[in-house]
Image (cartoon, rainbow, N blue to C red; front, top):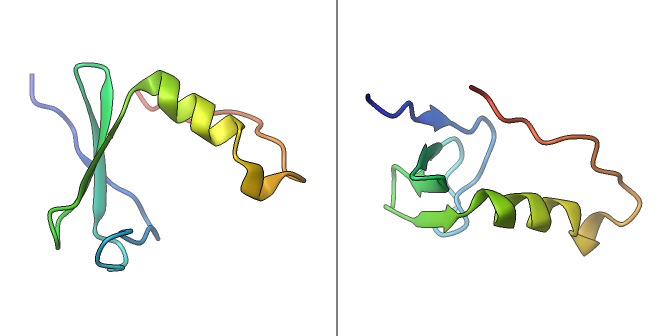
Length: 71
């Protein structure tokens, strides 16, 4: 089965700062984010994704209401 890769609308690459160049997919229960312009790659386990989103101290006045997990 082929893995479906999706682009992240409006996201900027942390390495090259290019807009709309990041794509994401899941591989062996690991979320992979890749920039198509500079080959930046970031990998996170689903546990790390949920923990980092929920415990972000940058947005202390905001509340996490859910994590979108497309099928």
